[in-house]
Figure 1 (cartoon, helix red, strand yellow):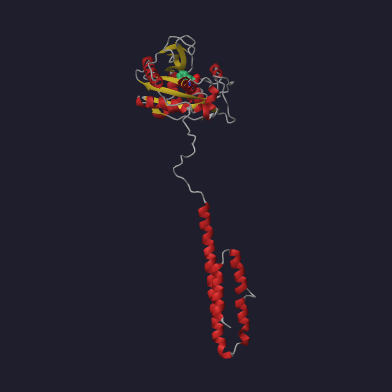
Figure 2 (cartoon, rainbow, N blue to C red; figure 1 turned 30 degrees about the vertical axis):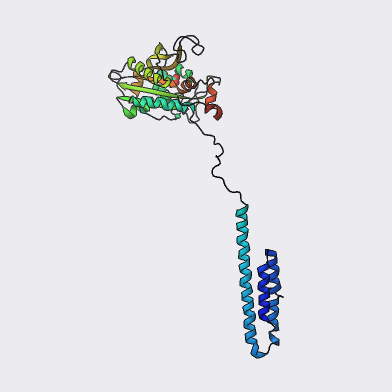
Length: 341
Ligand code: PHE
């Protein structure tokens, strides 16, 4: 029996194998339970004793050689599979422009808030934080609105089960800030406020205010007018005139409504200012002595002014937004049109 020839034939066959299926049947044919090489072993008993050893070694050699060849071919098929896959994968063209991403933008309120904060910081004010959930004391009593005072009806309040309130105005932080810093004091405190309002184009139950407070010796209404005029001229990017009309708020005495010359027509009269030339903008006044006292400040020695500016209002005027509900709508398409001026 020519074992050499059997091996040569088998190797030639393997070389010509083109598929994994062919390789599997080759394996069966030679190395399987009833395969040719296995059968050779069975012939052992007919081989003369003195040749048995050489025969056995040769058959074993065939067996390990073929095993190694099959293994080699298998590896080749596996690698080929991967290479074929790579070949068939579309190449990535890094020069193609990427699909357009939608960019976010700052909310109109945030834009105006940042502007106002920057201006007040440059004038030496600090920026304070206020709570959204407040004690009744801070929201009302500490700003001179005792229990059962009719002024409480001016603000429809959301009361919580624990007796606290959603702050109805940024003035709720006045007392805490006075106690924290004492005198002299120059602070602004922006924040979100809540009132149980019926919604319409100019009323929201959630809105933004910024409160400002300056307390020192010899502070007067002139200081109030100066700072407001300075801030508004900066916000609108043009000279703004202000005027004060009497207004009532329990925490200021005297109290005012501050009007600004119409930034659209410069005061000549237009649709926005209803031909009057002035627009009502923000309540303000000289801090009531009771409020100073409750904040631990001696009203005989110190005076101060305070104002409460509605950010929603200011943002609407700045960006020509006519519908207040848009501000809380999350309507990105509309809101992202507000650009920093
Ligand atoms: N807290 C008042 C309001 O929201 C506004 C205000 C603040 C008035 C400061 C005067 C002084 O209605």
